[in-house]
Image: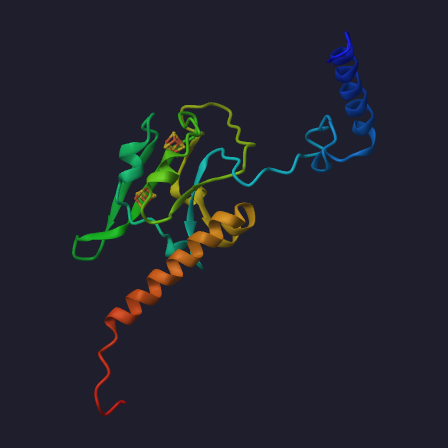
Length: 187
Ligand code: SF4
Ligand code: SF4
């Protein structure tokens, strides 16, 4: 049976503990704290999401996006605009010539990341995005959205490792499928 007032006492002890540990423990050790931003910064948790970026492998020309338009269709506020690049004979080149995202409209939902079948678009940790006005300056073109797979591996290592493994397996399967069957002479 609880003694009258013991709950209040327990609560006060929690407050006292948090007050004292705030002086001795760092944020990632469970201390209660105030971050002296911008001089100090809290370490972002891996699945923190802000605005989307486009991933490339190796160099920016090796953009993963094939301009399928799924993210553009599924984006709730319709802030993605994509135009397919054409090859020399005018056929779709399976990569975007235009890929803009209006950060002023983006609501950070992450749906573009969820629906992309080509592991091309992911949510970034960068949040310090400012502009003198919102109509034009916050529209991010493809060039500004491109970031390397190494960057993705750095900010979201768990997901990036899963995606890398998935892509590696798919690549190996593809190579195996196009290899000619072994002949009796080659055995
Ligand atoms: S995070 Fe949401 S709102 Fe922003 S571009 Fe992706 S789908 Fe659109
Ligand atoms: S980012 Fe993904 S879903 Fe969007 S157009 Fe490119 S490949 Fe398609």
